[in-house]
Length: 41
Image 1 (cartoon, rainbow, N blue to C red):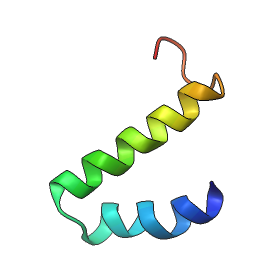
Image 2: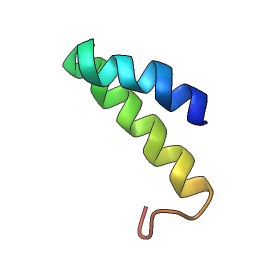
Image 3: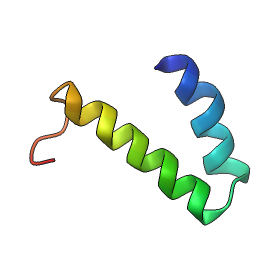
Image 4: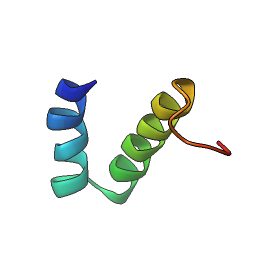
């Protein structure tokens, strides 16, 4: 996960399109919710 955040997510947030950013944020929310890190999601 850390490697994915450091590469794909970082690139999407810093140089990607709005759709890229949104997609990567949704991926992070999904992963975090699977491991109980986000309450209410």
